[in-house]
Length: 82
Image (cartoon, rainbow, N blue to C red; front, side, top):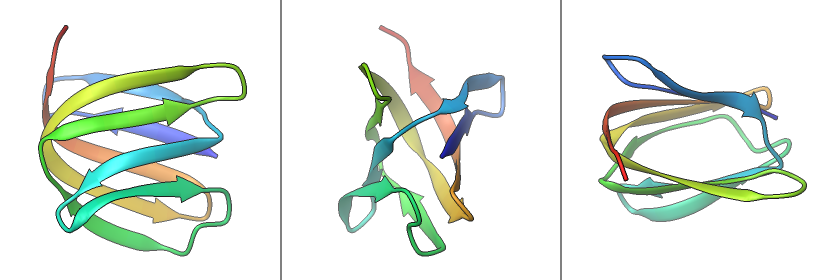
């Protein structure tokens, strides 16, 4: 699957992933390959990105996620830098 995370200021992440967990407004949920199309608002929280070998966490400030045809796009209002 292809994941893209962008903010109004800059692109944050782009790459192939095996799964992604996002902080949905009604609770966190995981997106796996062949997930049904969905659009959801996001709360402040962690986007957990898993590839075959590693896990990365990006903290976002709200936004929207869209999943269509194994492409996940996260439009975040901002990110919290570590």
